[in-house]
Length: 108
Image 1 (cartoon, helix red, strand yellow):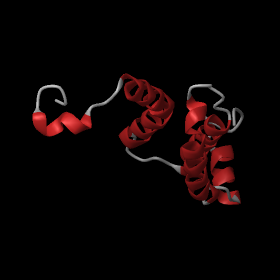
Image 2 (tube, helix red, strand yellow):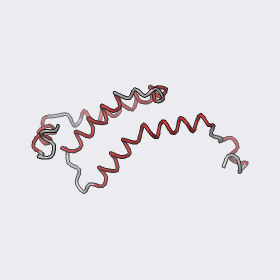
Image 3 (cartoon, rainbow, N blue to C red):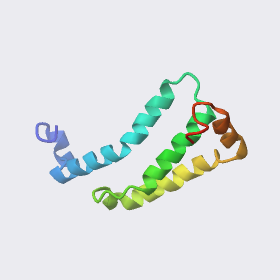
Image 4 (cartoon, rainbow, N blue to C red):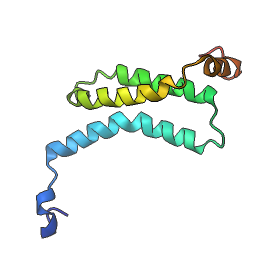
């Protein structure tokens, strides 16, 4: 549109911007997949959500891809917000729910 429509001439996305968008999309892919998986379940129980949150938290902390490091400040803010939500799940009841679920107890 920026090339064909004069109203959008100032909205040109550079090649570097496209590369950055690809990096961001790739980084956010696990969050998208998790959201879709949890959304399609009729009843998402705490025993599923807790391990998912832990996996995503680990993913954010272990992202050492050199391309994503330029977004370190954004990821740090994202992790802080995510931690606030995940802390609500970290109590004895949540852990007991995971332990008592026969699909997860030994694995988790």
